[in-house]
Length: 254
Image (tube, rainbow, N blue to C red; front, side, top):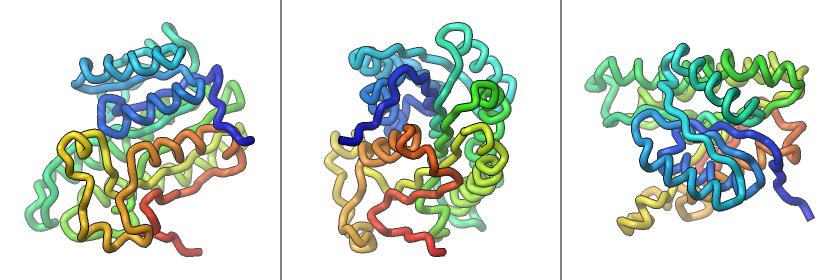
């Protein structure tokens, strides 16, 4: 029987205070990983997730950083290495939130924020954490992308542009570090049901669901499951992949 086993690994989840980040962090702990929980502003919610990680019998370390700033990420890396050890697994999940509108109306600052929090986050994390992975000849990197990057729909140009830039960087990175047994992949969720939806009873979105071959929205747990799989040795021969988890709404062609 196949099992996702991350026992003894140290995982970093950025944006661990967010709706998806919290579920990913808890899931990795359930698979046996110790978890570094990154946040930018919401420490209280991140501490709640840390309790869930510890309830699984794993270590949890809460760290603050601005992923758009290299020095801040370097400071985070030093803290993690001192207090917990070398990071084996990275989930780049953090992203700046902003109101979506048309290209003509979108403030330029939103395009800049999406590039900084999507593309440059990965550059900063790679420059900071991957040298240790290269030294130990092992590592896993999963970036959270989106179905929007493939669909390029109206009113989400800034988000789409940031995530498409992310896609280019991680594909190059996968080729650059593959020789060191480091895999670099992307999970691309659709419009996902989160705990907020469950509390507000907004799980149903009929118009959106009509466009999904499987006829429903995915859940945060389903995204976390794919993330955990890609971080495990079950996916040791998968790298450079963009994997939609959106019920078939995006089907990359060969």
